Length: 335
Image (cartoon, rainbow, N blue to C red; front, side, top):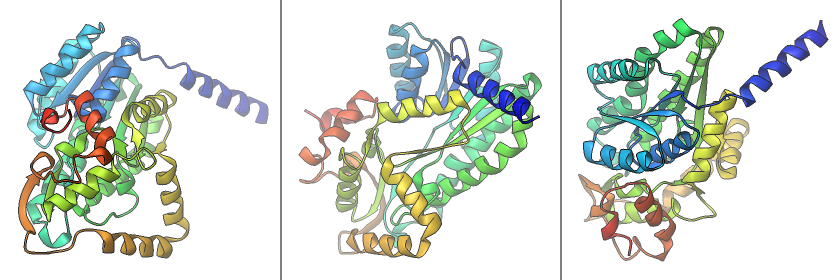
């Protein structure tokens, strides 16, 4: 009996290792730039049929042109995942073009940086609509045909901010906690249908997305700490390496992936010693920009919040990533 069970486990493990993305229909939300584009490049190399969804048609077309040069079959769909009707129409378009959805990557995201006092209800609602409701809409639209075929893979890009509440990122971390909860609960309910769900918790990544992040409060100071911490090699991971780890976890049908050693340590410490982690977060918060005459509740994008600290040599690697990964306004920041 034990031998049979062991053989079954080994067989399942072998099947997971041998899963091929060739000719698979892969949908990536937020696929036109940043981590989504890096994921698209890897799936393209593996022969997948790609669908990229994003709000901006211009960046979608730029991504499609790049991917088609390496021989990928690419469908691009302008879509705001906060709008359920748009999502349902987009998923229906994918099925009409490719017949099925084999892999769904919920990657679309926004980042709002600033102190609690400067955040408004709209900031929280926008983050929840993007990181919680949006992935739920795509899952609800794609899951029925996956269940019918008893096959499929879903990857939800959460964040270490979905395991640990990070100061000055409250709308972001609140919404990522919601996505984490959805991922953990749904995974158990769909496993018997032959569908895997992988929740990904990256630490800091060099995607170049700081250029388009939103900032409130002392916006130049907020942009400086955020862009520097997300650019340092010893604090952050190259987005290409992160993307390969994510694709590997999807291939194996892993339940969870935490990216970067720092994020792994932080998650374990928070589970075992939450009071100590809380004290560390309080200390970190004391170092972040406080209020002042220049503090504002008006939103500024990263490219509107530059200073002598950023862009600089300290943000060089992050700024290079913005060029590679189709982030806008990069020419103004990188020579």
